[in-house]
Image (cartoon, rainbow, N blue to C red; front, side, top):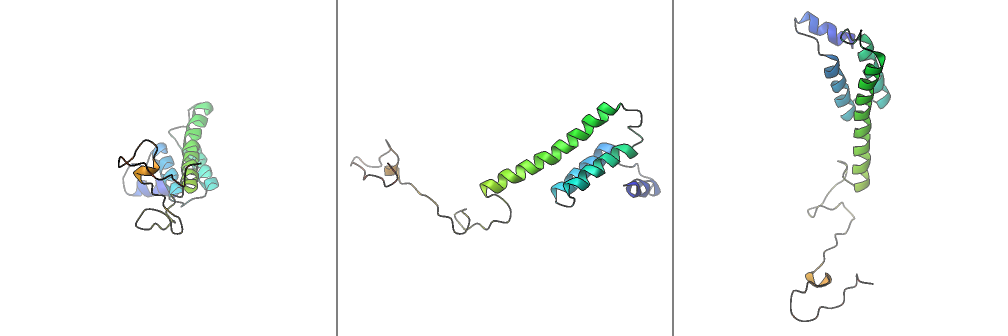
Length: 129
């Protein structure tokens, strides 16, 4: 990380702020460029090396670090919910939007109680108990 700050100094640009560096770490984690442990260590190192936060009370730094860790956790939760719903990018969808091997249930209006498409009585649905 100190290499990143040094490279900005050489180019006469301002180094990224601690929040910018931490958001970059979160983005790298989301792109699976870092493990969670490496991301947390990087966030902690970013704050410990930051001149901006040298005189900041430890409880405020801890709250800031907790915020970035919560972002990592939120990404994990989103990924696990998507996996449960089958919305991961690894699934192959067919033209109907279902995954290979899945069947799509299509109901006719006569299968829905109280919604008959014609005045004749509808056939009993095999889906009703």
